[in-house]
Image (cartoon, rainbow, N blue to C red; front, side, top):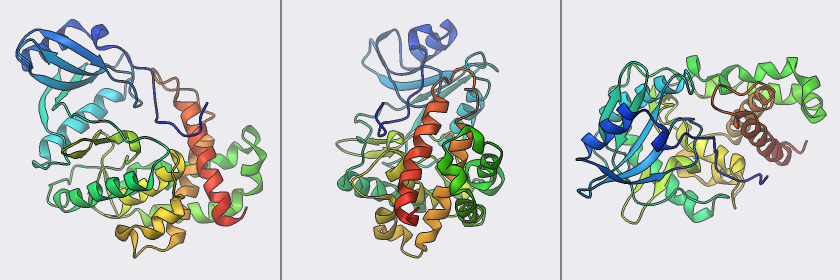
Length: 314
């Protein structure tokens, strides 16, 4: 399996969604659905599809019920709430409608022509993605988001998840035990670095962007957090390691104008915390409906490890 690939779970096809969800989607776009293109990618077990009605109307629909995964419907509710709060902007998706029967939740979002950027990242695509994040930063700063969780209180990957590794060193590659203390010294700084109240996408990866002919859009807003305003660009830097890139994570971090005031060790701390968390949690059983999660965590941990080896000469 390639080290450089988009995250991908196992999704239910739209045709297998409950009748009531499919009927609602058809009603919202004006009649019988005549075309369905199931989408792959992402880590939800629920259906995600581009749909078109007989009238020619199009939309993107994503849905999930608790029998597939008990957490995902709540993530969709969070995404619906933040999408409803976002103002109109070319780089932000437009929410059309929401279905919620207390169990199944479905979002109807504008259909966005284009595709996710390829990985490994090219230098040009990284600049393009950075431009999108910079364009939406002042827009997000105007959104009332007091209800959004603080990253310091609800982002264990960077706050305390890395501490799990100490108890699991006999289950992972010996490299982690050999360098555990040095990495932990960096990782313990991460929680202070992310502190802040700026509204953040918080899940910036290549597969959460759509590059189109006329507009580029940040998608999948179910993981929003409030934290340090530079963190979305830092997440993009980390994805240079996690998904692969022509530029190293450290090189992008050093060259990115939005990160010009940050010390290079900040990135090292974030990567150490994330890598240690992913390594530890790759030992977990997969969550319901998400069989690829352990392998994805293991791949991200390994990719971040390789970057850390270069930066710290481990």
